[in-house]
Structures are given as structure tokens and as C-alpha cells.
Length: 167
Image 1 (cartoon, rainbow, N blue to C red):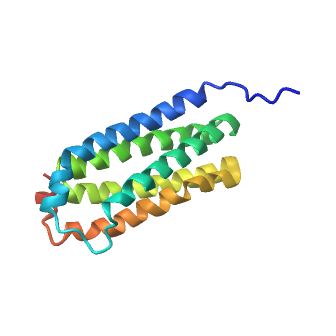
Image 2 (tube, rainbow, N blue to C red; image 1 turned 135 degrees about the vertical axis):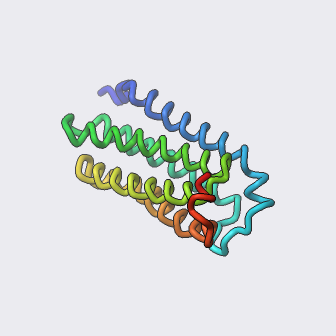
Image 3 (cartoon, rainbow, N blue to C red; image 1 turned 120 degrees about the horizontal axis):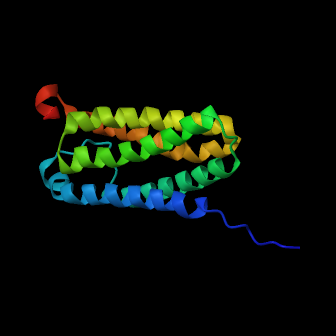
């Protein structure tokens, strides 16, 4: 009996996309960590810094597993294409949030972008639940974290003029 798992290219390119997303997000975050730690008054719900690494590592691992299961098992068609687009949009929004918030300090724009990211992540989980069943729940921590991130980032917006905060 052959117990070896067959090789699939998705085992390479999906984690590569995830690692690229994580690297770019981390890069943009690192550019603004001095500003984050010294110039902002953090809201009371802000988790300690040490929480972010393990949380994002878990989110990236679970998202990669869900993406591989989806890619290898979901039927091809319109919903498959939509889901693929949601995965890529999610990765782009993930990186852009780090760029907007940490690098550019566009707080109000990053708040609205995070809201969009939350909606896209929830839609992605819904699409996965339809296509691969319970494995779509692998994205539940991501959905919860993104909505929580919006909750604790909203106080950063304060009473700022939206146009001043965007530019």
C-alpha cells in the first residue's frame, strides 16, 4: 500500500503567496513601528505587541491550509473564480492596510480599508463554506480578528476631519 501523499504544485505556490503577503505586510509594518509605539495613544482594547506575531502566524497558516484544500477539492466554475479573486483581494488588502496605517499614517483610510478587509474575509469564508464545507471555518479566526481589529482601531480615528486624515 502506497501511503505517500501525491505532490501538488499548489503545495508550493499557495504558501509562496502567503509568505509574500506576510513579508510585505511585515515590511510595511516595520517601517512605522517607531511611530506606532511613540506617537499614538493606543485604545484600551489594543492587545499587547507580543500577541500580534502568534495571531498572524496562526491566521496565515490556517488561511494557507484552507486555500490548498479549496484549490485541490472545489469544483471549477464561476464560484471557484470568485473565490480565487477573493483570496487575492484579501492578500492585497492585507498588505495595503499595513502600508496605509504603519507606513503612511493614513489612519482614517486604514480604518475604512480594514472594514473592507473584514467584509472580504467574511465573504471568502462564506464562499469556502459553500465549496469545501466545514474547512471554510479555518478562516473563522481571521474573520474574528479582522472585525476585532476594526473595533480597536476605530478610536484612532477620533474626531478627525476625514479629508485631513486621508491625505
